[in-house]
Amino acid sequence: EAGVAQSPRYKIIEKRQSVAFWCNPISGHATLYWYQQILGQGPKLLIQFQNNGVVDDSQLPKDRFSAERLKGVDSTLKIQPAKLEDSAVYLCASTPYTGTGNTGELFFGEGSRLTVL
Amino acid sequence: AQTVTQSQPEMSVQEAETVTLSCTYDTSESNYYLFWYKQPPSRQMILVIRQEAYKQQNATENRFSVNFQKAAKSFSLKISDSQLGDTAMYFCAFMRAGTYKYIFGTGTRLKVLA
Image (cartoon, rainbow over all chains, first blue to last red):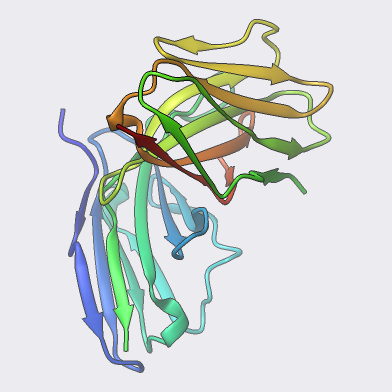
């Protein structure tokens, strides 16, 4: 079974430029997450999708970040314009479970490392 | 709001020895899950072990086991017979049942020494 795919693995941009990250979750996984992981910190949720609907985007800086999940499958996270403090690893994760009674293991991609100069 | 605290930023252990990583959490919920995830250098994060709050018995997975103290809101990870491949960041995480919203701690960097 293929894992969670993310691209690009690395990206270096100047501040005020834009960048987009792509994620393809494991086939059949209904729930998809984008996390931001700043060096030395734990993952922080940016947005959670269930199928193609947004469940939680309360911590997404909507003035510069946007995300979509087309047809409930793959997803794109965009940053425009980027700031220095956006330098981080952006992790995509998915889980097949929905509803109560499941233990909800998260499956992560390898992450996309962004450096903003 | 739930919080997860990992008070050990870094730890080291000799190969073949045992090490315990600490995690405490705060919640008013009664039905939840706790997880330990491992993030090797430049590799993806993977699940190590999970514990369901309503289960009294501590979870074990081969060399990995937890000490779950529900009243104390403590969830430590014990790694026995440490191996070089255990070198990684370890994150403790909390999920309220049915929400699929995870809260991660800040992580503990574990280095296994040869």
